[in-house]
Amino acid sequence: MAISGRNAIHSLLFLILSLLSVSVIFYLLDAPFIAALEVIIYAGAIMVLFIFVTMMLNIGMEGRTEKKWLRPRMWIIPSLLAAVLLADFILAITYIPGSPPVDQAILPKQVGISLFSTYLLAVEIAAILLMAGVIGAYHLGSQKKKITHRFLIKN
Amino acid sequence: MLTVPVEIQIMLAGILFLLGLIGLLVRRNMIFMLMSIEVMFNSAGMVFVIAGNHWRQPDGQVMFIFILAVTAVEVAIALALILQVYHHFKTLDADSVNKLRDHN
Figure 1 (cartoon, each protein chain N blue to C red):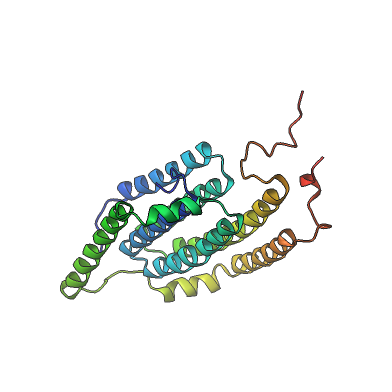
Figure 2: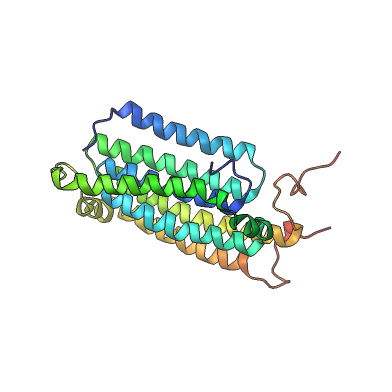
C-alpha cells in the first residue's frame, strides 16, 4: 500500500508502518539495537525529510481531503489498524513477564566494539560520505537563481 | 527467541525487495520512486542482519549501520535534487524530465 497509494502523504504513512514492522522483525531477530536505530533514524529522521519536502511541494489533495476527513466513513480503516496495534501491544505486555530473557542476543556492546575496532576505516569513510552529503544538500538546496545546475536550465 | 528457519527470513527480505522494485518500476512520481528505493535498502539491510544473526556475529549489524548512513545521505541529496527539478520543471513526473535524451 505504500507504493500503490494515490496520495503521497497516505503512502508515506504506510511506509512508516512498513518501517515499524521491519523494526519489529529486527527485534525478533535478536537485534534490539538495530530495531531502535531503525525506528529512530528511518521513521524519525528520514520520514521527517520526506514529509517536509512533500508538504513543501504541496502534493496531495489537501482541499478535498479535509472535507473527506469530516465523514466518519474515512475513520474505519485507520481505527481498525490502530485496534490491531493495540491488541498486539496488550498481548505483548501480558506476554513479557512469562517470557525468559534473551539468551544469545547480539548486544550493542559487541556491535560497538566491532564497529570501532575492525571497521574503523569504514566508519571514517562513512563520516566523509556524510560530510559530502551535507555539502551537496546545501549546494543543491540553495535557492539563489545563480546557483542552478546547468543540466536543469530550461531552454 | 525466534525459531523461524533462515530460508523463510531471506524469503521475507526478498519479497520486500521485490515490492520495492515493482514500485520503482511502476511509479513515475519521483517521491514514490525514492520511497521504493528506501524499501529496497531496508530489505538489503534485513538480509545483512539475518546473516549476522545466523552466524552470531555482530558484523551484520555493523553493515546495517553503514547502510543507514548511506541511506541518509542518499535521501538528503535526492530530495534536494527533487526540489531543484520541481522548481525548474514544475512537475515531479520522471518521464517529463528527459532533456538529456536526443530527440531524433
